[in-house]
Length: 81
Image (cartoon, rainbow, N blue to C red):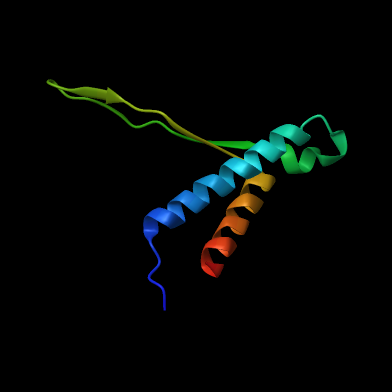
């Protein structure tokens, strides 16, 4: 049995997400497929201000149905490898 690498899985997930997002971007002009290309933004903004250090970080994820399909296909391809 092959040992699966977590780094390769993350690479597959990111590439699947990007591929799905790019396809959604290409299909945005098609009105009939707007339910596939409409995206939802997940945002996380931790911040703190201590006396000696302060930080303000914003992490934002943009998800649509096609990007989720890309992630699912990436996991399927990873498991087949």
